[in-house]
Amino acid sequence: MLYLGLAPDPPDALSTPPPNRIRPLPMNTIAQRVRHAAAALPSHFPGWAAPRAFVQLGAGFEPEGLFDEVLGSAALDDLGLAAPGPSSAGAPLRLLLGTVGSTQLLVGHGHRYGFEGGGLPEALLPVVAAALVGVRDVVLIESGCTLREDLKCGTWMAATDYINAAGGSPAAGFLEILAEPFLDMTDAFSQPLNAQIINAAALAGISPRLGVYQAVAGPHFDTPAEAEAARRNGADMLGHGIVAETVLAALLGCRVSALVLAAEPAAAYHGRRLQRANVLEAARFCSPAMMRVLHLALA
Image (tube, rainbow, N blue to C red; front, side, top):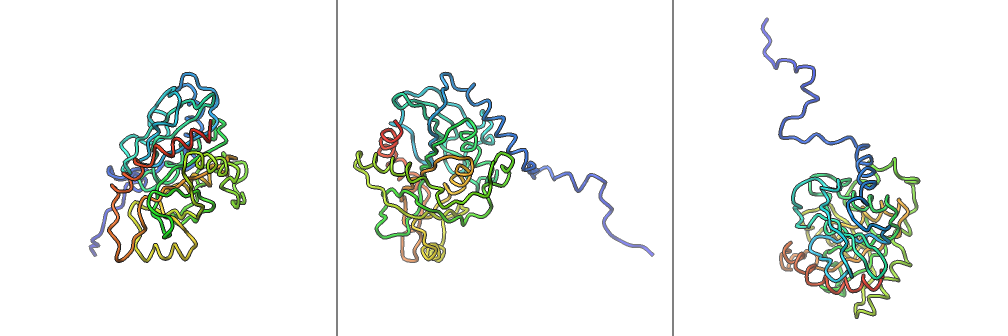
């Protein structure tokens, strides 16, 4: 009797991915990679002297006005902190070292997002490297879609809590470098650091509101029904960042503050259609004022 069917695979066929598929790295190599990158970080910046804080700027935000002096700049892929190639989110991918008074700051001018193809660990490499070189204050600057009538576009919100609706644990892949992965996250956002920045904002004529940030996977915007569900969750702002970085930085012993710009209203059935270009333009327009605030707060 003749049986028609597929010939058996050669022994290594199932373990060899097709040429158009990227084989994912074993998760434990992520921790090894960031350890190696962090150890080499000072050698890329002449004048390195233990930066006091790490500031991560989301897509669209510019660092002009933050530094008194820029000491150096390096691309994230050259530092081993991002895969090569441009950011689909429209973010520059570089690390800056500079001074504010006698204080050194490390700034991530743009970063990978979890939706860009490298997964969540890839997006977290800069903040993890900063923590591993001894930085203990982490400030995250991001844009989002406002869910509240009083959070008008152009208003800043200091996050006091978060909702992780993006899926996945930020700790995955980094467990071997965490002393205690089961941390109570009630105080993930540092009240003292928040107060320091809010007080500096008042001197610059800015009054950030307080609120809850909900992270979603993206890159698409949420639907009106999803925005309404987020309101019922207790969220005040929706976006694609800050939560994973907050969790991991807190697990690594850092104080964390996150300032989120209301760049667009969340989706509504009778509202205007959301556009990424408007979000990036709002971030660029509102950058100078926030850089003045951070200059005052971190000097």
